[in-house]
Length: 73
Image 1: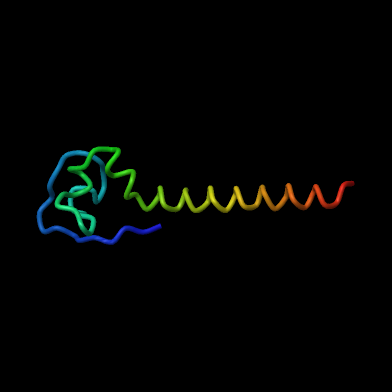
Image 2: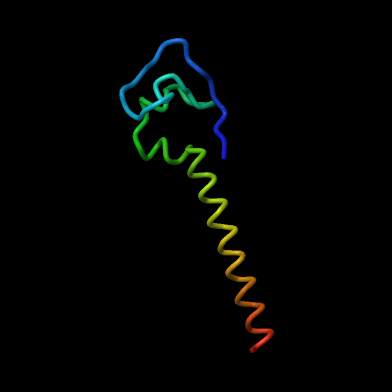
């Protein structure tokens, strides 16, 4: 996943780690380091990637169920 945003000139906030104090997501007025965990999780590129993986695995499971019901061994 990815998150569009801006690199700020000065760090702001004390939560998070790494680039959080200097990264401001597009459409927001605060950096990741200023956001609550819940706010940040909703925007997280890792969360987006995990959601995509979950959807893929669910589709794969449905495919396997359909395949096994059509071809009983």
